[in-house]
Image 1 (cartoon, rainbow, N blue to C red):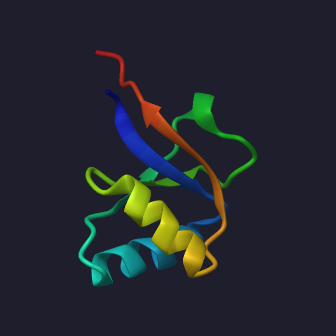
Image 2 (cartoon, rainbow, N blue to C red):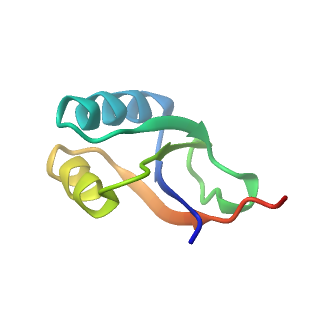
Length: 76
């Protein structure tokens, strides 16, 4: 299993999304989206270590545009 990332459309959405998730008890961290995973997004994603399905639903409910989602496998 890789690192669960929710890709968003802008750094502004990334910051709003992180704050929304944290305020709802879900840990979230802003990270650069790996270059290979970028689909026209801004290059920022949210790393959500747990409860990612719940996090995605909460973001969509609050109008946060999600570009995509991935489980990024970091190379060693």
